[in-house]
Length: 203
Image (cartoon, rainbow, N blue to C red; front, side, top):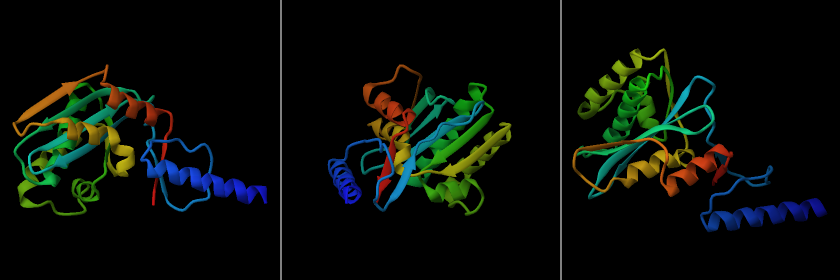
């Protein structure tokens, strides 16, 4: 009986956390249905590159962030441009991120995007629209210069750092901002959440 009560209590606590949209770490398995996701650190000698794009009536931008095997930040980019399709922003994030890796002498890169279409396009499973074929070619060219690269899909919840970067650029001009730690408070919190193993639940 106590087990049933504990399970029910855990469900209530989880529901309240989600209702208030709080970031939380699940300390144990909870008896609730849903999709669980977690940002995972790359293997030694690899860099994990999270990328994202953003599009609104007034702004179009992208962000990418490269992280080391311990989860700390190697470098990050955010930029804006005049391209009017979200898929272009998502691809630009990958292209610029790979360019940053090459400039830093990084040769093993695990790319992650929360856009399944973009992942499929870069992996050659879908033919890209005509207006972004050049970006796909640029990405392919950069990948040939790496000793290893993979492009993978991730859930939005584990892509929060790149998402924040993509939404921080409030300018429609052609700009590209590069930076390294120390990071601002909001981004630092996301990084710490990821490093400590925050688990996100999607219903």
